[in-house]
Amino acid sequence: MASIEFVHVTKSFDKHVVIKDLNLKIEDGKFTVLVGPSGCGKTTLMRMIAGLDPQTSGSVLIGGKDVSRVAPGQRGVAMVFQNYAIYPTMSVRENIEFGLKNNKVPKEERTRLVESISATVGLQDYLDRKPATLSGGQRQRVALARAMVKKPSVFLMDEPLSNLDAKLRVQMRVELIEMHKKLGTTFVYVTHDQVEAMSMADTIVLMNQGQIQQEAPPETIYHLPSNLFAAQFIGVPPMNVGDLGEDGVKFGFRPENAVLSAEPGDNHFSVRGIIVTREMLGSETIYQVRSARHSFMVKCTEDLFTVDQEVCLGVKPDKMFFFGADGKRIERDDARFDGYMKALRGLSHE
Amino acid sequence: MRYISELRPVERTLGFVLKAVVLAVFVFPFLWMVSTSLQTFQETLAFPPTWIPAAPQWINFAEAMSAGPFLTYARNSVTVTLSVIALQLIVMIPAAYAFAKYKFAGKKALFAMVLLAFMIPGQVTFIPVYLMLADWGIIDTLLPQIIPFMSSAFGIFLLRQYFMQIPQEIIESARLDNASEFAIIRKIMIPMSMPALATIALFSFVSHWNDYFWPLVMTDSAGVRPLTMGIAVLRETEGISNWHIIMAGNVVLVVPILLVYAIASKHIVKAFVYSGIK
Image 1 (tube, chains in turn purple, brown):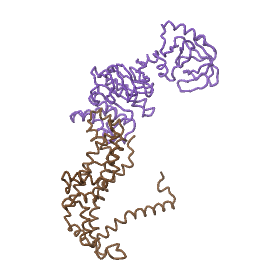
Image 2: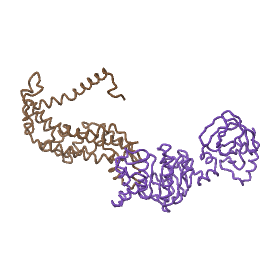
Image 3: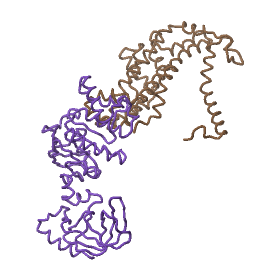
Image 4: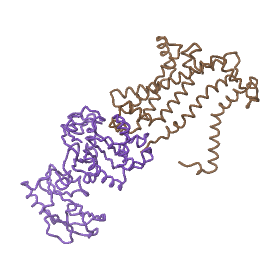
């Protein structure tokens, strides 16, 4: 078990700087998810932890020790790749055993470890099979077993679920949470899927363009996004955002925090609009409401409206967010907050 | 792609005829060689040609082999060919691995040199090579038949292409499993490229087993000459060509190639249809 620390880390490929002067501490034993759009630098960060593409400058610490000059195989980390990277000419057993053999683990112990790990992931009947004869889910388990058997202090996972079908992905998500609980090891997980991040993480590290946008538990990142990017990246559909028309400030609210009604209610923010699309998802329905100046997504638990119907959309004041011209969220105790709240009232009923 | 059973009868017949023609063109010389090797001297001169000898003359083989130090020739051929293949693999595998998977200064220039070596025919370089080897004092031994072929540009090129298809993640995964670069080559790259290695080894075997020009230039004495030269000697012994004896020698020369091909063909077919696992 170990914490991971990035200290003033910069990474460039050729002359292109991908990550500049980044500082981050990943706590010991936590499930940390690095999430962001493609090209944001999340995989680069992970590969620096593994030592596959070491940093250009700065240092990376694992368990308090600077590993900048330590080879990948000596760092005590295990990695699960998106395409599993199973050795195709080796049997399942040989795949799981390979790292142990390289680490000179005696044969009896190796056999014992392989048997127990393969039972944990449900591969005990496939030990002598070649990877080509396994299904996607089984290959995924081989990759997990291969990582687990080394008892690493850090688990790295690079989009390990993206090659699985939707149903298996949901199942594996739960299994990974259980696995983390059982092992108690530091997990670092890279994904571009915010649902995976929200569902599994103890801490989410949200990245964009090589910079950390927010580092917080899922609840915090959802309810108190630090900036416009966080507000719009996390949540399905993302937060609705509109121009306040003052100081370049934007207002925003979550789709599930808007209330639709046939008649105007007494909500602080209230606009009239027409329902343009309706997506019935079973337990909830998502409407797209177009008003004179904006288009908003609204998530309702009841399916009461139809397309082309005119409705009133209302949001309570405590569900409203404001973002400054720099994109940062304006806190409730900020001196400007009440002023923007008043200005929002003026936008209503347009 | 359509299966043969889906073709119309006319197409199927036409296809069969074409294949038969191609087969005949390639197989006929071999069959004639085998037939001639079993004929008497009179039969070889008869017109119209004798297709099937009246009584197979197995003695032709004994005669071919007793015309010179046949066992020495065979031993030289085997030694030279196997040494060349072994050395080529030792040089080629790490070189192809470096070209396929490493980033290093001068990689492009070095690879361009490999391609250049691939394109220059031996006839252009044999004089300077001869002079160099003569300088070393090793002309008329087995060494000049081996040393210039320690590396194969064609092999490096083909193997590099093959190595490039092996996903980087598999190698990275092995590095995280604490495997040395040598272990990665031995336990991952080589087993994954057996089809390519078999193909390269076979090509190399055929070209060196059949080589006549190079040993002709580099050797003088029978003691260090290969089979190809021994068989050429059969031709010049008596002024008239004893075709039945020459062909018997040729059969002996060709049989090992057919045997090696039979063993390697399973892998070679795979080399061309290999798609890997997703």
